[in-house]
Image 1: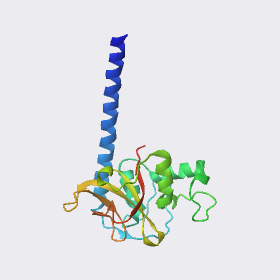
Image 2: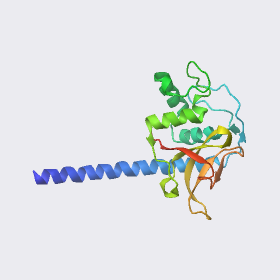
Image 3: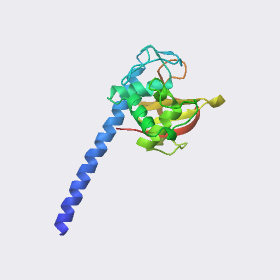
Image 4: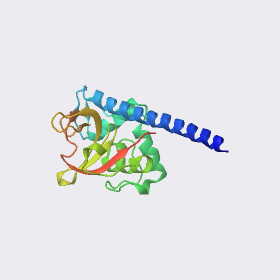
Amino acid sequence: MKRLLSVIFVVCCAVTSVMGQQERDFYARLSDAALELTQDVVVYDPAYFRIGYPGGDVPANKGVCTDVVIRAYRKLGIDLQKEVHEDMKADFAKYPNNWGLKRPDTNIDHRRVPNLMVFFSRHGQKLPVTDNAADYLPGDVVCWMLSGGATHIGIVVDRKSLTSNRNKVVHNIGAGQVVEDCLFEYKIIGHYRYRK
C-alpha cells in the first residue's frame, strides 16, 4: 500500500510539474505577443466600430488599451470578442450596466475595461492588488483607475526597467501600443491571469 501511495504521489507531482510548466509557457508567450504589438503603428482611437464576429477587430492601425489585450490573446488563438460575448449572453446581469445596453453588443463589449475585469474574474484568476512589483508577473493583466474615473488595462511583460528593476507593461494610453515602466503610475484596481 505504501508503495502504491508513493507511486501515486510521484505521478501527481510529475503531472503538476508539467501543468505548471505549460502555464508558465503560456504566460511567457502572452508577454511576447504583447511585446510584438509594440512594433505596430497604432493611433489611439476610441470610436465605435462595427466589426465582424467572431474574430472581428478594429482597423489594424487604430485601437485603445483593451485592443492591446485583445490582440495579444488573439495571437495565442484566444478570441476575447467571442469569449466575452458568450459569457455576457449567458449571464448578462453579471456585467456592468454602465452603457444602458439591454443585450450584448459583439462590436464593443470586449473593448470595455469593466467588462474584461468581470470576464477575467469569472474565468481566470483574480489576484491580489499589492504594492509589491514582484507580485506582477509577465502575462498578468493589470487594470487601473485613471484620474477622472476612466479605466485602463495593460499586460505585464518580461522586460525589466533599468531604473526600477520591475517588469514593464504594454498598454495604449494615447500614444499607441507601447512598453513602459508604468505599473504603479496609476491606481491599480484589478490584477488577473487568464488562460483558456
